[in-house]
View 1: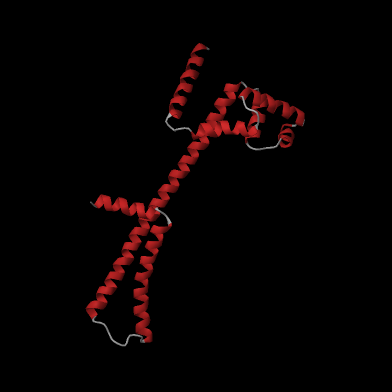
View 2: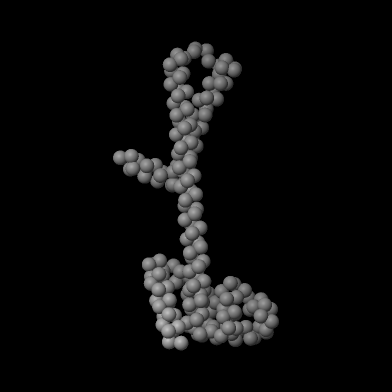
Length: 194
C-alpha cells in the first residue's frame, strides 16, 4: 500500500506544473499561518483570543505541512534531476549512434575521401559555396561531388540524404545492438581474411 502511494505521489509530482503548483500552494498556506500569527500579535488584529490548544494544533499542522512540503519538494527535485540525466544520456547515445550510422552508410556507399568530406559538410548544413571555400575547390566540383553522393546513396537531394540518417535513428533501439554485433563480426572476418 505504501508503494502504491509513493508511485501515485511520484506520478503527481512528475506531471509537471500541477504537482509543483499544489506543492507550492500547500507550503504557502502553511507559511501564511505563521506569518498571520506573528502579524496579528504585532498589530493586535485578534480581538478574541483562541485557546492555546487550538493555536498549538494549528501551528503544529502548519509545521508538519512545511516539513511534508520540504520532503515532497526534495523528491520532486530528485526526480527532475534523474529525468534530466536520463535525457542527457539518451542524447549522448543518439549522437554516438548518428556518428556510427553515418560512418556505416558512407562506407556502404563507397564514397571517395573527397566525397566523404563533402557529404559530412552537406549533412552539417553548409551551402555549396561554403563547402567549396572550406575545401579550396570550385562550386562546380562540389556540385559534381554532391551529385555523385546522391546517386550512390539513391536519393535526389540533401533533404532525402539527411532523412536516411534520421529514419534510421528513429528505428527501435532493439535492432541497433544486433547491427553493431553483425558489423564487428564482419570486420573480424575481414581481418582474418587479410
